[in-house]
Length: 346
Ligand SMILES: [Fe+2]
Image (cartoon, rainbow, N blue to C red; front, side, top):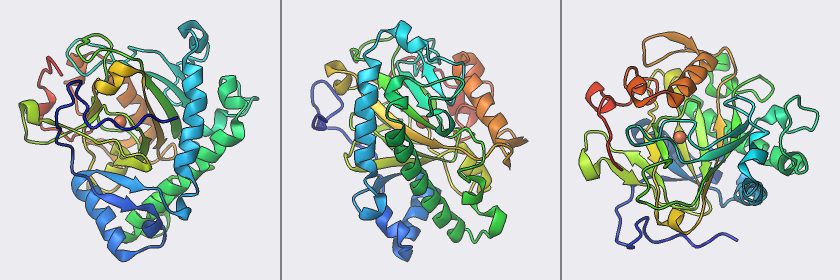
């Protein structure tokens, strides 16, 4: 059972200002409603983040599929770390990632989340590096969740292609054919229960997503977005969890493919009142282009999307000093002063 959404991310329950984000109806996008498509385009070009309302029949029960899969994986996360570590394959698209493998949000800290990633190609029991039984015993459920998530991404990409008047192979969805090998992945994240005053193993460092579009499911506080040009307390705004709505954001790859017409937004996760009470979970379908897709990146290079992806994940595991040395972590969305700022506390 899902706990009700807390009114505030703060332990004292004080009022909070949240990021003002557009709510886009997936049904209306699927129906090609021109007004809704214009709102979607505006959200992607100006904000980079939006809520996606999954209430219509066109969403094919995506929210319920998320809840069913999360409940299986939440049970799996209860296993001892040694058991979970058997599924660590040194991959950024499938298998287990242990707590603290990446840099955290604060200087010299480490991240505060574990991940189990499920790639579409390794759900089957015959995979060379198998997934846990929680996945393989429920392969149909997992594949269904992935397929319906993919349908949502393809529909959104098609709307962007129409809006940008792209034809044939240049259309965004054509870089995302299901059968083409890619780094696309379904990720289950658990942020173990911790105090909001913890300084070790907390949250998820600021970043932009490497891929095309992220469809994120989260019903607990923790996600924040960066407000360009703001400093101090005002630099980060909370994103209000809204059950029934996915949170979508434009990743580096789609921004680069669109010649920077679509924007990404820098985001991070920090501990909230939810995490004082129990573990925090989030689940994301991370759509990424087919291997070999080329674009001009924020370093001024023509690069393959799969190279960008692996370089970006290497930087995420690097030190904060290494992260300040180039644009990879935040995809060029921060100016140099902001990118090189040292974050001492959250
Ligand atoms: Fe992200």
